[in-house]
Length: 273
Image 1 (cartoon, rainbow, N blue to C red):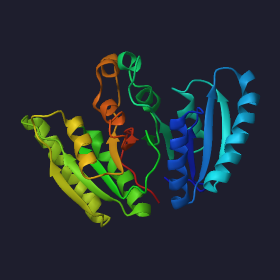
Image 2 (image 1 turned 90 degrees about the vertical axis):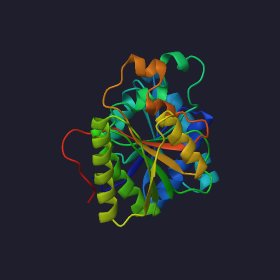
Image 3 (image 1 turned 60 degrees about the vertical axis):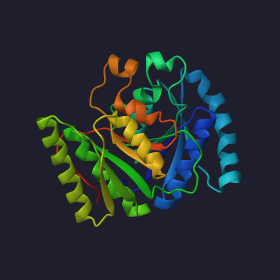
């Protein structure tokens, strides 16, 4: 449900990719008439005053460069839990976060971005580069066999409301009869919701000889998509982090396409007022 005062959070750590996330968030906020809150997480509350002073400078700089003045908030805690907690407290619509992809030690320990996102009630939009001229007009929505995959269509409808987004449904191919039935069920449901909301879309069937996540990235790059809309798994284990869950591969995609991640909720699928 939309809050009365729309809020977008930017996970802020003074890095270049955090600046990219802020740029994306400002474009988004101007379109949906929302405020933007820079959220910095510190290890010790003794750091809060110093970081707040630095953020005052960042806010004034943003006003000069982008003609948009964000708010800011500094919290003691862990990036893996506190970002989601604050987003819940503020009833945020989205969290924008920058990432360098999977590099160095993260190839072994897993994607930090995926760990931050896991369990979130609101979508994270993960970026790796500054925005170009896009406004989420062209979104790739991969469809696989997971039942919770249906839930991302709610956000496709929401994005279309503001950006008139065209949705490209890339459908996973499987030779397994049970998986085929679930994939078909997901496709039928998502198409019906898009049809009801008169949203333009096209359907493309993936190949069965290539990793599905690779096909999603390749197709998104081919059509110059502005974003990829995915549903993250309910539970990720150490194998996912070490060897690469599908979500992790898409989030860290080499073409640096923005990724909108939706964590599935329990219960009945809900829309927006």
